[in-house]
Length: 420
Image (cartoon, rainbow, N blue to C red; front, top):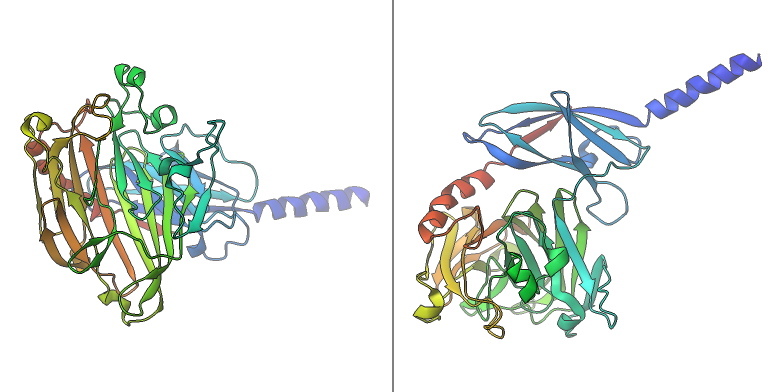
C-alpha cells in the first residue's frame, strides 16, 4: 500500500512539473527580398493562450541548434513578458523555432553583446548603477548623473540620452566592433585614444542632434522645459538587446493641453541603429491629440565649421518626403576639449514613416520632420549613424547616403512571427 501511494505521489509530482513546461512552435518569416543579419524576434507571453505559470526560463532551438535568447520584464513587475532572440535569415526565408518555456531553473549565461548603464555620480567615484532616476521637472540633476544620462551600446555604436530639458541623443563612435563604454564611459582619456578606443563624436549645441525628439512650437523645435516630472529607466539590459525609457509627466502644451510622454529606445546586438517608440497619454485639453505637432531630424554636421575643421568633408544632407533624412559632415565633438578630441566625420540618418509626417523643414542647423501622433497617440521611427573612424564602416558621404535606402527598406520589413 505504501509503495502504491509513493508511486502515485511521484506520478502526480511529474504531472505537476510537466504542467509547468510549455513548448511552442514559432514560425518566423523574412518576406523581404534580401538577407537579414541579427534580425530581432519577439515572442509576447501575454499572447500565448492558456499559459498557466510564471515563466522563469526559456530556450530556443532551430535545425538542431540552440539560439541564445533572453527573457525580458518590460513593465517592471519582476515577471517575464517577452522572449527575445536574434537570428540571421536569408531572403524570403521561413524558419520554425522550438521555444521552450519553464517555471523552473535559472537562465543560461550568454556572452553580452550589449551594454546599458544608468549611473549616479558620487564622491567615491564608484558610479553606482541604478535602474531608475526621477526628479521634479524644475530640478537640475544633469551633473549628478554619471555620463549625464542613460547610456547604451552595441558592438557597432553607442548612444546616450541626456537627463535634462534637451533630451538630446549623443553619439559614441569607435574604430573596432566591440563593447567599450564600461571602460571609457563616454569620457575617453588620451591613453585610451592612443590604444584605439572610440570617443564622443557629436556636438549638438542648439541643433537637433541625431534623431532627438522635440516639441514643435511657433515653427521651430523646442526643448522639454515645462514638465512636472522627468525620468529615465532601464527596462532591459541584455545580453542581446537593451530597451530604455525616457519619460516626461505632466507636460504642458499649447492652451490647456497637458499630457504624459514615454519614449522607448531599443538597441539590438549587431545593429548600429536605434528603434524609437514614443507614446503619449493626454491628460486634459484638445481632442483629438493626434493634431499635436512634434519634430525630429538630423543636424547639419560641420555647417558652422571652418574649412580646416571640416578636413575635406563638406557638410551635406537632405530631408525627403519619403521619410528619410540624412547628413554627413565633420566638426569638433566637444568645443571645450579641442586639444584632446580632434574633429570627427560622421553620417546620421532618421527614417520617419510617412504616416506621421505633416511637413519637412530645413534651417541653418537642421533637416527636420514635423510629425503628429497616430490614432493610438504614438509615433514610431528609427535613428542611425556611422563614424568615419570605423574600420568596417562608411568613410564618405557617397557611401553613407548610398546605404540608407536599404536600411530604410529593411526596417520597414520586420519579420512576421506566428506562435502555435
